Image (cartoon, rainbow over all chains, first blue to last red; front, side, top):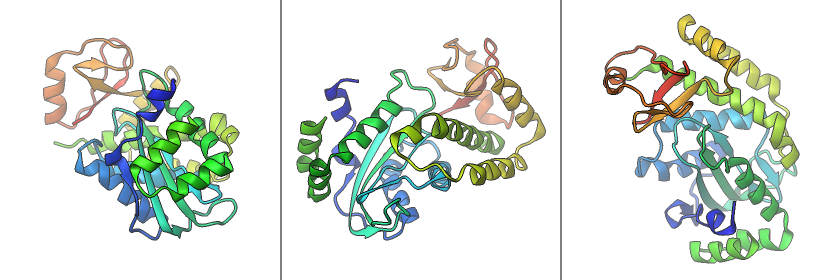
Length: 154
Length: 112
């Protein structure tokens, strides 16, 4: 996957600069709310249930204030990335127990033409492992700021 | 009419894929995978809500395909890319039956 394809996965309408929820499930529901509005997801309740099930397998909180909840599901027809910030911080049962302030939600159908789900997941993991970049992404206050950092890091 | 059985089966397949990918790939990306048994339990629990006909078809197909349920797009099965008869779509919306691709046998799922 080339850099421009990766960057194009991030969209302003799928970016939340300040999430209201204070718990993991509330945050997931809030992020999925963006998709419900645009009728992008076939069955939002089923998708939320799948994301919750993924969390039972092991927290998607990678540590250092970042979580990357993700799943494959037949309820969407294309790969979707939603980004949200929580200034208050959310307990995500992360490995380092630190509250999560930056969330990347990745959802993909089981069948994808380009098979980019795992490469995208891997790329985001790689980007947020860079201390300097992660801190800048966490501090981003709007989509423009955020996408500029992603663009420089990708 | 909504096919509830198919929706449960879709959720079942999502968990099935999740278990496989978590072990094969996600561990290497640094995600802690420690609730394998818990999720297997949830999968077993879900089986109780799937009719034997649906579950048997799924499990039979699972031996041949990674993803026994496939979406339909533009009247095409996205498992084998065969064109499906138009009446399938109409009927699938009207009744609770399970529709399978006439070419590859996979279970078909129509997006709204």
